[in-house]
Every structure is written in C-alpha cells, then in structure tokens.
Length: 373
Ligand SMILES: Cc1cc2nc3c(=O)[nH]c(=O)nc-3n(C[C@H](O)[C@H](O)[C@H](O)COP(=O)(O)O)c2cc1C
Image 1 (cartoon, rainbow, N blue to C red):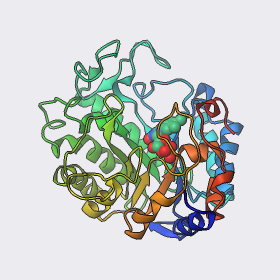
Image 2: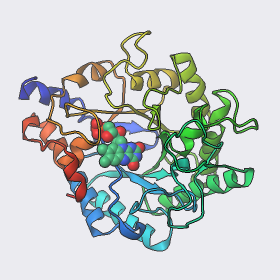
Image 3: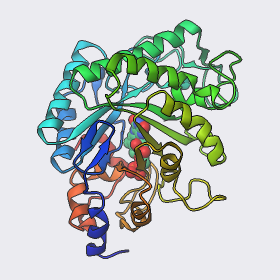
C-alpha cells in the first residue's frame, strides 16, 4: 500500500491533457463501458442521464457508455439494454450527450452487437436467432441452440446498422464512437478461429478474419468522414473461454491490429482484467496496452483493475493503491486509463485519486448493480 501522497503523485500523471486523433481530452481518465441493464424499453431515461452526468462532473475526461444495441433485430441478447436506434432512444442519448458536455466531459457510445449469445426465444423480435460467422457448435457448450451462420446479405445489413449508428452518434453531437469488438461478441467472433470457420472472404487466416471489422470501419468512415474518432475495443480473452487467445505472440497480434489501422481506426482499447500484467510473458514485461501502442503507434486505452484489489463482476473488492500504474505511466504504454467498477462504485473516483484519497473511495460490490447511483 502506498501513501496518499505517492498515490496522488501517480494520479497526477493521469491529469495531463491528451489528444486522440482529432479529439482533445482534459485528462487521461475514461469511464469504461459497463452494461447496467436498467433502461426498460431500450430508452435511456433521466436516471441514465444523471448517472453519466455525475461522473463527468467529477472530472472523468471521457465517458464510454454501456454497450448500446445497433439497429438490427439480431443485435440484442440481454434485456433493458439501451438501444442506439429509434427516435425515443436517440432522444434519450441526446440528453445524455448534452449533460456530459455541459459538465465538461467527452462521450462515446459503445456500439454493440451481441452475436451468437442470443437465441431465438429472446426479444425484442422473437424468432430471430443468434447471428455469428459460423454455427457455434464447438465454442458455446451451454448454448441452447446453434447460431445462424450469417449470409452475405446479413453481413451487409449488420455493417450498415453499425454505420447508421455511428452516423447518428455524430449527428447527435457525440465525440466519437467505440465498437465493441471484444469479449466474444459478434466482431470478436469473426476474429476468433473457433467461432469463424468460414471458407469465404469473411474467414481464413488471422489477417483475413479481420475483414468484418475492417469493412465496418470502412463503412463508418464513409459516413462520418476522416476525422471522427472511432475506438475499437478488443481482447485476447473470450467470455466463452477465458483462456482462449486471439494471438500467442506480438507477431500474431500485429496480424490482427495492422488491418484495423489501415482501415482507419483512431483508438485501440485493449481490454484486460488486470492491466499491469505482461501481455506476452515469454517476451518481456510490456503490458498488452504497451504492445498495442508499440505495434500500431495509435492512441491506446488501457483497462482492468484500476483502484481495486480484485478482478470480476461478482466479487467483493477493497480499494487499492495506484502503484501498479507507475511503470506503465513512466514507460508511456498507454494514453488513457479506463476505470470500470471503481467508477461505478464511486462517481468521484477521479477527484479522490487526484487528491490521494483512495481510502475514501467506495469499494465495488455486485449489490451496487441494482441501481444507477
Ligand atoms: C457491470 C459490468 C458491465 C460491463 N459491461 C461491459 C460492456 O457493456 N462493454 C464492455 O466492453 N465491457 C463491459 N464490462 C467490462 C468493463 O468495461 C471493464 O473492462 C472491466 O470491468 C475491467 O475493468 P475494471 O477492473 O476497471 O472494472 C463490464 C464490466 C462490468 C463490471
């Protein structure tokens, strides 16, 4: 455990402005995307507006919203997730955007298609199966039904839904968008060889399996122009299999990241459960965020375990020192730190970190998920 003054000195490294493509942030703290499943009817309400406003008012430089569904009937799995389509939901998001801007923050919606986590008994359009690159026979042992292997037409429609959502975000005044390309959801299912066994141009080797993400990025770029920031969140690990990995070494990682850079992604958001571990322990002690930056030269968001002593949604945690941030900061391994559970638990986390008051932060527990404090 470090002292309060040592923590404050480390946190000072986060309170420096940063530029991510065309976007200037007043500091390097982002709220990590966290689904709250508290928007009945898919519409962000006053409680959602206030929830994000509170974090922006308390010095969070960039809010990345909870995953929000793109406008395709196959996108949804979980209930009460806010939509990013339809007049009512977009009006709700517009109010969220305004509240965050009025408080001096910046905000990206996280655009989400849940892929083959869905099955056909789920709403809002029953009968629509989970969509994936291939039938998911060997990757979801507990899944009640096989996913539908997407046709060319399906792929085209889903890409268009991503592009529409990004264009809507721009029109509503958002500062950029984030694509949820991590954790085994649709974009990641195309990346991963266990879920993408296609023999056509959407499958193939590691580089070829990025085509779906690449075409989404291209379609978005066409709609929003060259400067609108697009972040892509990716992860080595899969929710379906925590030990699965997209790449076993930096060379393989480059095969995935380089096509995304060429396709015009602005920011890469590297999702890990604990950011300070080595990305590839057999190579050296560089974090995975550090590898992402080294390989691509792009701005990188790092995430996982900030301010808390344990990883996971279901755990009880205690607050932790920021000492694990010291080395990645010193070595410039990331541009922005995303803070998830610590900010969910305590809207004032950023202020308390700056003042070295980590001990005053409310620790995270699963019980906090019941409401939007
Ligand atoms: C309640 C909860 C919901 C989450 N929902 C999302 C989500 O919608 N999209 C996403 O990319 N990650 C999601 N995550 C992962 C977080 O963004 C973050 O990567 C993870 O919690 C680790 O960071 P932390 O230790 O700072 O919480 C969620 C995490 C939690 C705890």
